[in-house]
Length: 299
Ligand code: SF4
Image (cartoon, rainbow, N blue to C red):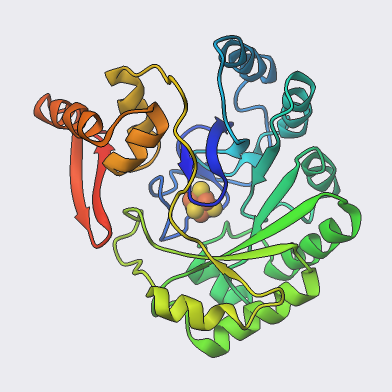
């Protein structure tokens, strides 16, 4: 998938749709149907690594392999073993995209250390905002999560990036963003990225912050936050394309025709024609948004 943060990314999905410790209004996947903090082997580690072996044998190329997907990957009890297995098989760097919720657990921090980049999230400033912005599982404690992030920074020698996700009217007031920035300073990530609603969100009440407002808020962070820009990676040389693979990708998250073009190495008119065919066949739906038309698989 083209990632706005990481370039061309191979996503490794470790939990079923939609298993998460949060139920964020802005989620690109869908509403959380399994709201849990239970850690277990949702899919067998050996099966994930066998799929990776197949992809590598078929000449798969990516800028990064991201352990993330249709929910929170640290809920998988074997995610550290999977990260280590990826590194043993290829030299492509790995990223763990986590919502930070389980970082208070030492075993989760130890497993996370296998990733080249640990990208954590922090979009609230206290327990009440945590409940509104992330709709966190009731057993989770915001202060314990922040302490876990500080411990991760102390223990982890690799890169730590932090995403701050802002929604208009929920957590974008300058005073509230300042509170998040103070907590971020105490954690000390290498990079901070401001994100907002771009793809169709799980909860249509989640509204984007303007690019101008994000730029104005970026300077409150130390180091200065980056406002995430559009995808700039190169298309794969000869990605095989089939209708089922395109629909499979659209089942994971809504994409534009440009995203599909980049992911499958298709010219713009070829991607548009393929999507038009899938729409006529009733397999996908469209949703116009301010920044373009998004395609989703019919559920
Ligand atoms: S955005 Fe991430 S953390 Fe939030 S509900 Fe979706 S998968 Fe979970």
